[in-house]
Length: 158
Image 1: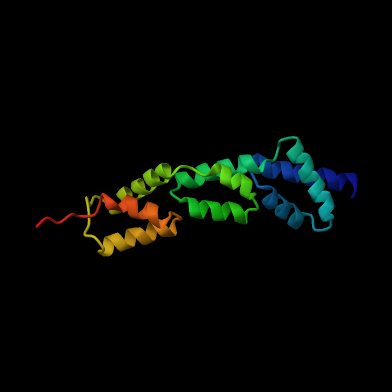
Image 2: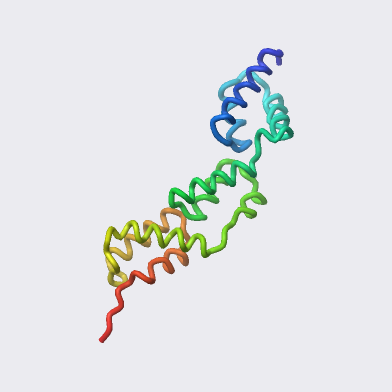
């Protein structure tokens, strides 16, 4: 690999990292598609160099990704699958796991916003099923979805 290609490779990696954090797997894919003539070992060596200089970090990427996706209302199952797809290691993913109380609060806030002013709904009704599917589709466990919906179920007294 010529020196000019090595400089271009590093510059492109730095440009990508300046915009946002990338996992090593994502960055490698982008560099390989941009520089198909460069051998994979050279790209891996550059990625090692970036990691050694703490310019690229899967830990930092995963933490930022978790915060972003939580702010957008996604649950742990969705976030974990996305991190795995982006090549983040299981040890990093396991260290990010939040307590169930945080996920429950997030799911409860989503339920309140989705109810659109309704206080509650009948158990097993259309709204209940719709909200459960919504939460489950967003990556919340069935247990978290069920608990977050409990306080909004209309209690009938006879």
